[in-house]
Image (cartoon, rainbow, N blue to C red; front, side):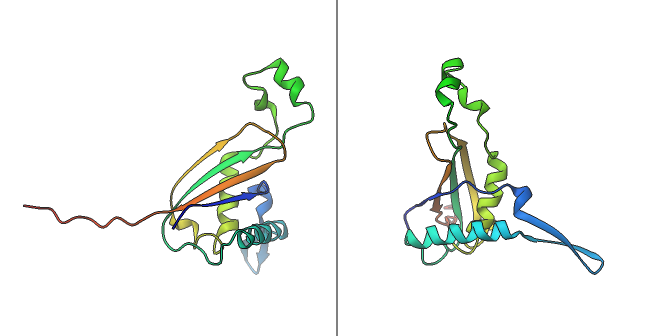
Length: 148
């Protein structure tokens, strides 16, 4: 199976993804309505990209996180050509990763427990905020019997 590439809207913050509530004497945690909306958007994009069922088994996930480019980006770039985008507001990679994995569960891959490896980078803002996610199915290597 070939890698799958999805262009998604920026994920919501992990702080907004989960809501806590009291049930009897227990505190329960569940996805928020905002999280459910985001997951629905991910599902719609995945389906329109031809994904009919989640990948079974291990995957590698790569995330390219593009913050929204601010209107004053040229002014910022003139001041600091090398690192102008350090001042651009963006969700951090780790926060984005968890929300993306939860949103893709049972849509793109079975469960985040099958994410065997991952990588991510924050990219220079070049327009609208987005995240480009590439999911690569991993072959399970069978151990070779040692030759004597």
